[in-house]
Image (cartoon, rainbow, N blue to C red):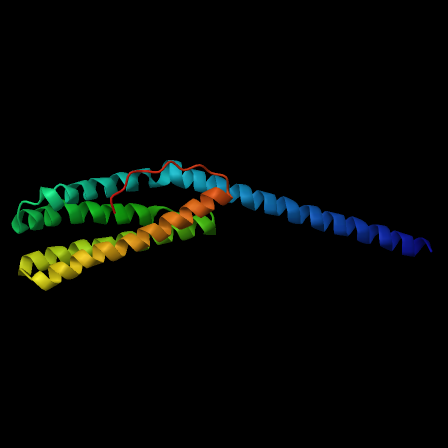
Length: 174
């Protein structure tokens, strides 16, 4: 009889330890994602975002109502926009989040930025060749890329909400 009671007590203690360990690990994981997200937003993407903003400001200064001519846009794409945007992508790629959830957000950001970079390159190439259809296709890529950036921002907002992290909305023109 003593052996049966002892086995029941040992089983109960084991179950309690397993459950406590499970809940502690879940709590630690939730805290890890939250801390990683805060670090990502407040520290890691700041430099990258500055480069993105710089490239987009260059672009905005020569498009729409600010358009001068194709040659000026071509030269700015070649000398400033594309190199700065490439640095932006390199900066994003150098970020190594600690958690899978934040890593997935960063991967989406890289995907969107790479598509935008390809659109800039396509625009530069079309302007160089004076290819109207190629230029139109490049401009369409910019419109399509907004969907990728929106997807990344939506996932970031959902994760931030889940982790109870407040993110100030930055002004972007992607």
